[in-house]
Length: 562
Image (cartoon, rainbow, N blue to C red):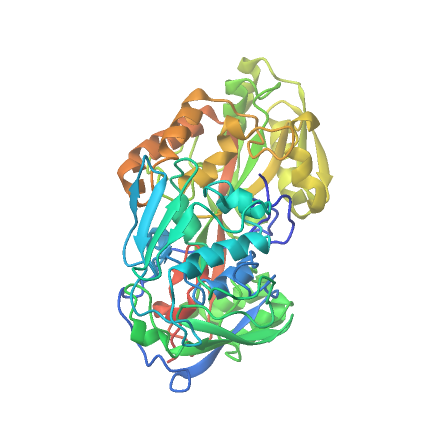
């Protein structure tokens, strides 16, 4: 169940649940003025629009075919070119985690105990090639994602009735999806209630393509889609364009803007050169997946402060603690570790691209508490003296602890091991290659006592993060629950809250907050904080108008040139 980081390419399993092996400073957003919602703006005609705007990317997308691409550099391009039935609100911060109708006429009717989703396609929709959109195109897109082995296909095969049989070649279609081209009705039957299914439907991989699109990857000539943009002129590993779909403005999908500028994306793997291009305004947008080099940060703060900011991302950094073995099967010992954490020191190690925090859920996610941290302020230095006394009281002083980590984060491991030494343990380190790190520590028989980890969302739903503390995810291999936490309260709440549809999350925010406070008080993990990313534009971009989606980063549909 562990898998690829959204911001990297290390695939640990076929599912996208990300225990991240990303460099610190990979990101997403909050706090700037949101794009004014609903309706359309601009000309809807690429030839009449200003631009193009130029975007420099640190790496090429793994694929621009929506039913194949999975990395951030893919999804930030495809989410506005391949709309599915649902998508995310075009807004900054927590508002941008809200699922809204896209090609569906409204939110779905959910019946039969949460297992039957019924919706209707908007009328008059056309693909970027002018062909009419039909309800059956949805079923075809899901089948295509499965056949092309999209890395997150288990979200479909494990939830939709008949999808696994289709994947195994035992059926010619997915029995759980029923569509009616005449009425536009779409019904999806689930195997069991899965509250986050609306988030699944919002993946770009569920974006509609015409039925009959080849059942093979089309990375260099992506198929027609429905959305503000269409992808064109792909030069593999080098560049591609996002042209304004000439049909989009007339479709007037509420809440999804019509762009005013086309986009030219080019790959520039050197962060320093990338930063120079944007700071000098020879390129318009810096890649949010890449931390700015320190010299560029200083220059941006000095010369371009009105077009540079740090934006929080729904990715948490933490040290897991083995709660099933000494010394961290002792609650007081775990509390001591969290009490001693010097989160500002980790923030410095992350070159500033880290917002200190103590809860598992990042601030943008429903359920992040407003209550203070139970063991000291996250912005203060740790209380080593108090923690040392706690270790003594716990009876675990002098015990040996091996701290695991991957090579990109050795400095974090060093800091954590030094903290353990300072409070009375005998710490050693085991730092290994990123390629083997997560498969190793996610195997319980390894016996990893503590280790560094990052987790980037599959989607902005608290149940996605709580896989990390769900005893039911403990497996002989590939466990999400690296600390082997077995807490009946957590497991029970996940079971109950996990069935609640995404649209109803705000109604149970209090229960998620209570679960977060319980988890933090038990010190099941030593949370460091949440990733942040650079938002840096050229002088000719309207910085305030550019929305930073907490799911996909800079929202190109809101990019406006002065």
